[in-house]
Image (cartoon, rainbow, N blue to C red; front, side, top):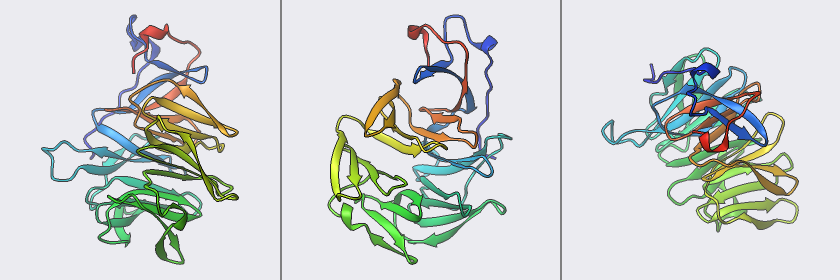
Length: 277
């Protein structure tokens, strides 16, 4: 079993001088802790048919010579396990339509079997995988050169439009427009014009994700941005967020430096200076 445990909070358990709620786009949510005492959970991704959250987290130096580990937790039963056999496991991509789960680490891309709970080597053995993404095709970002590749007819090739860019985060919209980020900011690729525009050069992007209704959110070092038209608005002004996903019911699943939490709608709020993450 993954050495983690869940703690559920009720309104009565919140100290009078503290607040366990956050405000997202003028709506208040209670923080329900799903997992705690884990190191910087990144790359949150929910397998919708089983409501299982896959993620990576950082390992202390004393554990091993591997920096990252992949794990999952069933959001209904709260059963959690590490995923063995992937050295430096750090990224997840899910083809929801075909029910296929791809995992990446420092030795290539793997496929995960939900029945056997095993990960088998898939492709790019020996390649260091920084990030995986799926939209019609499987993409990966290599490390340390941060180049973008796409699976075409069973073979990965370099995406020519991003040949001269480093890519740390990547997201394809339904119309094939692309948002991507690197150390210098967040950018937009217009698929019709074949042009790249700067969205924001002041943010550090940690994850780009759509909710179940197709709304695009960007998880950054200073909060969460929501796309509306061609503009982004900050809907959660909060530092220390590392990952964002949505469960099968479209609830926010978020992570901070040590916890994974679910946001549950709350009828009440907090005095702003008493909010604690």
